[in-house]
Image (cartoon, rainbow, N blue to C red; front, side, top):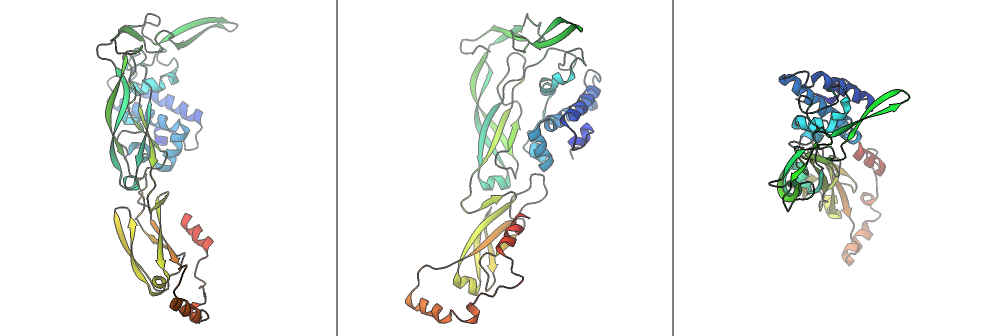
Length: 369
């Protein structure tokens, strides 16, 4: 079982952004590869700290983690980073958090040149209710920029491959040293040496690729999942960006989703309400037969346990709520009208709600509790 992100960084759920950043810096320096050469356990701790910081430092990701736990990111076979992140991901995304802790250079295992990350791509994936409930693997075609065959790069002479240039300025407080992204290579540390005719100024060409996306059960409208390294390539020895997958949920013909619960409107005739009846209703995965007792009232809600949407955090499934609606005919035959006129004052036809019968507002309250 994966360790809690707050526990990894040693902070509380109420920790501020500054406290989270400070805790991550402390952990990452402790387990940095430069300080622990060849130590696999330290490397895993280093990756775990980066995974925790990636989520907890982002307000939106943090909110999803607090609500859904690890499944909000890790249930999709590589979404969310962490142990799916490689060392290059970490150095690229969080290198600047260390300042001069490792000689002003935060490269892969020993202070090498900085590696630039390619830009992310975003796509929308439409899911029907069955796919949301059961989870699904989608294959999508993505057009991404990749390094052109035959392109070569050489070390940038401006920054000597570091991706950054240092500046020293004289101030009233003394000489101050600062660094900024190299204006020549844009931080890549390399520039194009040979470029094929079909490549752009960065040595890239556009290619279509089929990407497999594993989407966990219980995702919600607007949720963003991440497929690592399936964005655009970066020039030179950079690392690819990520593919951001935005979930779009298609409306079901009969069922309405509300969180983990599903709602179904069942219409029955007056005669069926009086005599009782068995009905087949639509549920995810097929029909479900329910029995309605004699004298059932319009507005009654039947709850079918476990027939709703799975929880993203793995804690069971929601319910299917069946709303009973007694259909009143708008036109009657002469005989039918005479029957109701005759029985209008009959005691059985006069509304006599029981004290145990809940009001409309109580029923609504129960639905959301």
